[in-house]
Image (cartoon, rainbow, N blue to C red; front, top):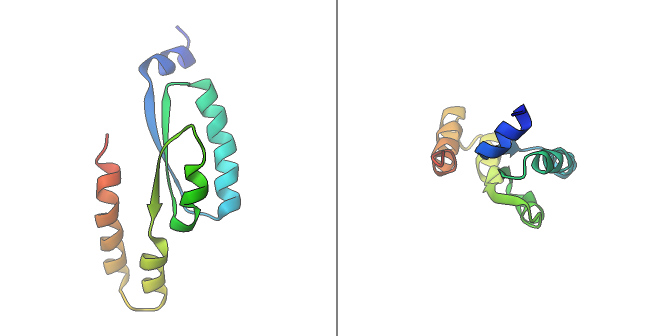
Length: 102
């Protein structure tokens, strides 16, 4: 059995964290589409900035899109309303349900 066949038989899930601009998201989608075609049972989920979530949800072969509230966390940090520790803590609380799904 080839490596590709073995991986495909097992299936799998992949969470891609793409917190760049829309151009980065589009480039990632092209690469992820190739991976999904090689491994049809691969389930791909995305974590994107909230302003890009609607565009990502239009991609039919993406299993799930998580919209990270980056403007709230990053905005508060940039404006000095929270410390780095508070921002990381807020992000960790938000990410817990995303990463709890094995």
